[in-house]
Image 1 (cartoon, rainbow, N blue to C red):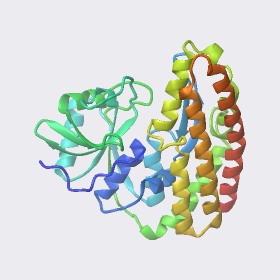
Image 2: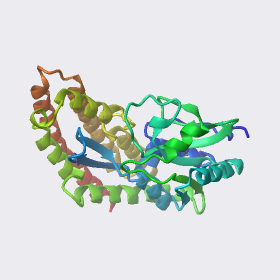
Image 3: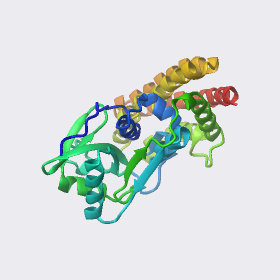
Image 4: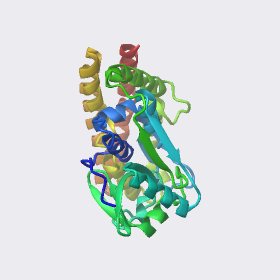
Length: 328
């Protein structure tokens, strides 16, 4: 078959990019920031288990949840399928593509032919838009665009094991009860839910409490990590370039708030979009301090970065409190 006739979109974040292309397949045109915001995408998590060589700072909601949240917000129907059989997974994918359906696939990009990664991450998303001969065609994020990969590599990627992995997960979308006139209310509801989760996190590693914890622990990285400068570089690069859109997803969130202001007329959203652009810049400053440090300046860089993170915990708590109040 030929590739499905859509205008492929390559965005900043993998899950929002995949969903945007799935919606475009049904002539629903939404921006990536709007999808990110409706998906209650902004969050924070600090994680460093004993099995992890480096700490992990996440600025978004857990994988899979963004799509579910958007579906709930817009009355879409998500058809998610999992199987332990690679053959069945491929057959299901081909059937959907033959029916003209763009399919979201969760996988480990490390295994794909075009991959540049030297690490595994089994919670990456692509939008599959067709197959040609013995290769599948997928839409990636901005740095990669439209790519093709072999059946064998696709099978390995989809069945990969690891943290946050799924069993050959594929997702299809049905526009169902989508009603564009409900976008304004959906924005307000999604912002309220995001703010409440951020302000009352289930564990102290998340939300504004997680940011404060990250600032406190960051100062000790030099003594606790085996290769602190290398780890700092990995963390900083992930924060800025790991599909975050810059500023640990805060730039995407600011863009969403600007759109939410246009849709709802709520002035606080416009003011807080400005605030989140400033916050995003400060997260970029943290990322740059971490990844630009050398052996001689590592401790100083960590102290400076931690001081910024300390302030960001208070700044983001205040911003989310204002968003919660404005969205009630």
